[in-house]
Image (cartoon, rainbow, N blue to C red; front, side):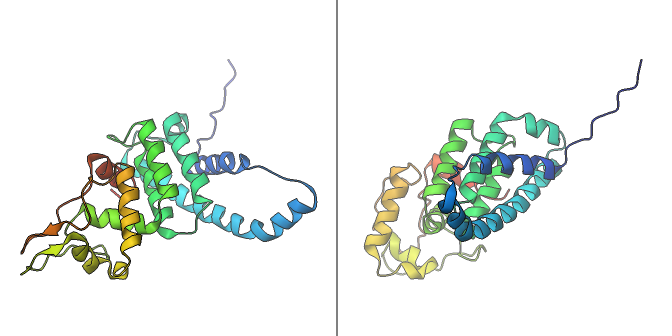
Length: 231
């Protein structure tokens, strides 16, 4: 019997490239002078975003394989839920320049095939949240989830409080640029609550002296943050 040579194994870059190609090819194309004008204006930044995301995606695949040995590139490419999530994340990534969102999308791709990951429906809902929420939404949600969270990512104990304060006053200590923008943060709270990510409490509730702002996220909000965060 003739020897059949083994097919070369796909690398993380091969898998990432296939995902990117599938996502980009889904974009509509116009012809004629309009196409040339669009290419001149949007071509270079789109290519740059695509290339930068390609690098992130390749690193994400490598990280998955490093953390879960049995998830080979072949198995990843056959995992329809993972591929769908990665393609969806790619399409969103091409529409944003914000680092916070790109990091969240990259983390979602890494977490998608891991044990304990949300099911396919929740993964798509969470990606849609990343797509439509602003970085400030994500920042406030993260702060409200962990009362000891600080903007620079380090933990610190809350100072002892000698007086009653509204929850928003406590939040201002971590995000001072929100001061004096009540309509703005009320809108953000309403958005997060409408999506079921925050508990239906008022941002103006009072915190007892010596107390810290209790976690405000719902169970879905907690799972969302876990899905878009580094493990």
